[in-house]
Each structure stands twice: as structure tokens, then as C-alpha cells.
Amino acid sequence: MKTLTIIWKHYDKDGDTCNRCGKTGETIRQVVSKLTPELARHDIDLVYQEKKLEKDAIDQSNIVLLNGIPIEQYVPDTRVQYTPCDSCSCLTGVDTSCRAVVRNGRVHEDVSREMLIEAIRQVMKSLV
Image (cartoon, rainbow, N blue to C red; front, side):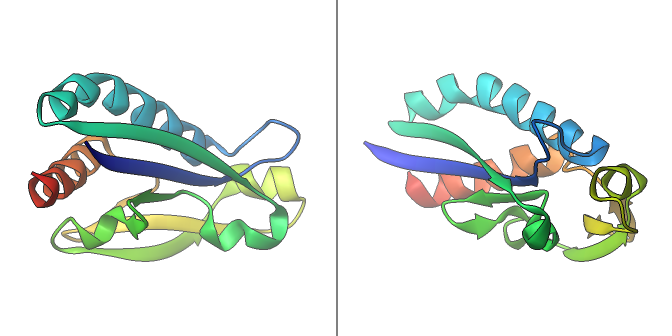
């Protein structure tokens, strides 16, 4: 059996994360639940892990890795950009910019369901 490992990195302060990371986490859990049976039919085991980050690693927050590779590398016409994050600023106590993904000129502060599904299906193709 082959394995698809999804790792979601996000800043965590005493069990709290910022709004955009929270939305990404919710999306990941929904997509994992939806796609696990499909992946199993292709003999692919899906493993989901969260990696909680400290303040000094906040530049890595809201990264979603598929078998160690950021999802934007699987989705065409995407790039990373850092944008001000009021929610993280409240958690950290200083002005903070967080990771966002830009696709076709549109900034996505949280990882969209469509991008995540597209990236997972790209990985799935490479494993089948």
C-alpha cells in the first residue's frame, strides 16, 4: 500500500491559532474525510498530521505539505505571498504577516477546498 501524508503546519498559542489557519484546518479535515475512501480504492493510505509551530516559526504557518511538498507546487499558476494577519497579530502581540497562496492573481488567505483537492489528486495520479 502506498501512503499520502498530509502535514498541516500552523502557529499555535495555548491551543489557539489564527482565523485563516483555523479555516485551513477545517478544510483539510473535511477533504480528508471526503477523499479517504477514494484513495483507499486506489490502495493509498492517507495519513494526516498537524504540526503546531512556535512564534519563531510563524513564517511556516499555514503550510500544507503532501508527501513533504507544499501544495502550491502541485497546483498550476500559484505562488506564495505574505499578507498582514490581524488574527495572528492579536495572538503574537506584534504586527504579523502570514502565508497566503496566490492563484491566477487571487489571494487565498486560507487554503481553499478546490486547491487542496486538486493537489491531492495530482499526488494520487503519481502514486497509482
